[in-house]
Image (cartoon, rainbow, N blue to C red):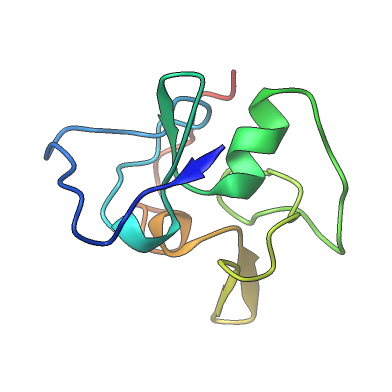
Length: 95
């Protein structure tokens, strides 16, 4: 798993390979096996590797395994900033 460099460009329409959340916060984005994920928590969940630390993400449900990218907003815990700003009325398709 490789964390993208902040200077790496992400296409406007890129989305997480697991939860389809738009990738708007590149600091947490990781590349694994040629696919982009919103954060390491989603990448690990996609690979079947879990390790829940507390609750799962309030947007996509991924187990929070990377506390460095976790975000709390309005008393809700998200795996990353991408999920924290994702539209609340859109249910992500979990793969």
